[in-house]
Image (cartoon, rainbow, N blue to C red):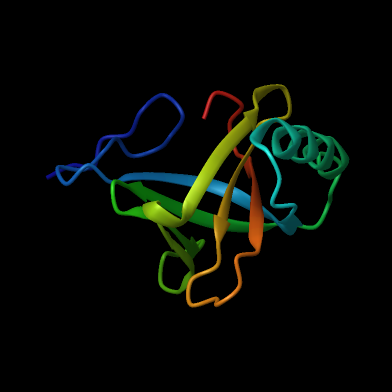
Length: 125
């Protein structure tokens, strides 16, 4: 069976609903536990600062109803996994091909939130 790809060179959703995308992992930062409006302002300020970040790592992201998983580029090593119930919000800056999500780290006993930032390989992604 041939693996079809969409117009961005990415595989379409699999039968189980999983969507796979290539991206650049820019990094993570702490997010204040405050009201949603204040969190969004903080995120967009940080994303503006990170758009010129030259340090990034090519990764493969897999999105599903269960959550988000980040693998190394060859999809052999799982680098990060977040159940959907731990993701509190996501945002994007299409003009800079950036997207991010905020979550609690797995296994963490504190309530600290972290924002994980990515740069899409294609602006439309």
